[in-house]
Length: 74
Image (cartoon, rainbow, N blue to C red; front, side, top):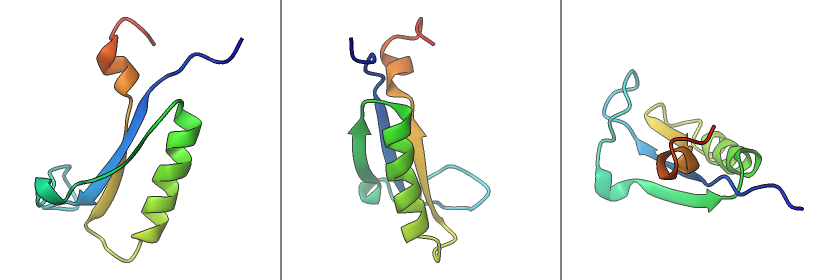
């Protein structure tokens, strides 16, 4: 039996302040993708984070969407 799908979403863009998590312009937030597990999401996150290492305001996040869809699951 295959592992249960645990939806993870990777998004990112430029933040207003490097100490916060508020995006500078929501219309420019990048949807990197939706992934069936944390491992795949982490690969995509890492690639985007490394590609934007020269921009101090760029940040990418992994959203554990499966927890939002069903908060009773861990």
